[in-house]
Image (cartoon, rainbow, N blue to C red; front, top):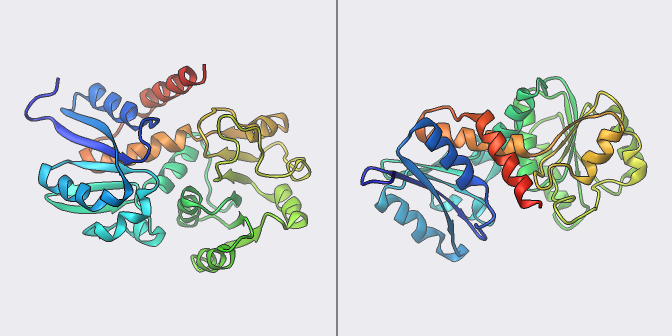
Amino acid sequence: MVDANTKLYGLIAHPAHHSMSPLIHNTAFNELQINSIYMAFDVAEQTIKPVLDSMRLMKIGGVNLSMPFKRSVVPYLDSLSDSASQLGAVNTIVNEQGQLKGYNTDGQGFINALTNQGISAKGKQVLVLGAGGAARAIILALINAGVRHVTVVKRNNSTFEDTKQELQSWGSQVKVISFANHDLLIKLMRTAEIIVNGTSIGMAGSRELPLTNTELSELHTGQVVFDAIYFPLITPLLEIANQHGCITMNGTGMLVFQAAAAFKLWTGTAMPVELIMSAVKEEIFQRSK
């Protein structure tokens, strides 16, 4: 029951109505009997500074951020975690007595999702498709997890060279190539132990694939194929990976574990992830009807 002592948390996004975050956090608050509530705020991008000022004034405990705010919020925060600073992007803010600190829990969510399935990235050869916000967080997390080699595949557009230079500066184990480099991609598809789709290709309503049929024909038993997309639960990429005998994972684990990391930062309490995972999958199933 909401009362005068209820702590407020929320999501800052545009649009915000589709988000799973209120379901995730309110289910956790209810299960753990924490007197808090989580709301979604659909906010215009140009109002982000006064929104953060309101966080301080109203003593809002913390917020999550989705696009387009993950980068634009950074100049208005008092401090950043190491990963948020390196990524230049924030998905979680903690209000520490009026001081707003930004964190990025996306990469931790990815690694914890793998660990939850008994998979370690340490010493592995990994292929990451895409170099956007989610992919960048995954790449940094892979480096910190001790990956042997990570090849990032990016579109050869106006940002290619700058992105290549930046990501390769993160560590000698990182190499950035173009989606147009088909011959090399075919070889990498044979040797990669973990393949990650960090693009939006394959989201609900799309039958597109992030790679060509020739490249995908190299998939084989024993490989892990992870798609950061969680709607639908089985993307076109995962369908093909299943046919080739791969171990497949969708984005629900990453979604829940990044939320669990934020929840822990706010409350100091572990989120009941198995309960939340079931609630999220049920909600996705209902939305897909």
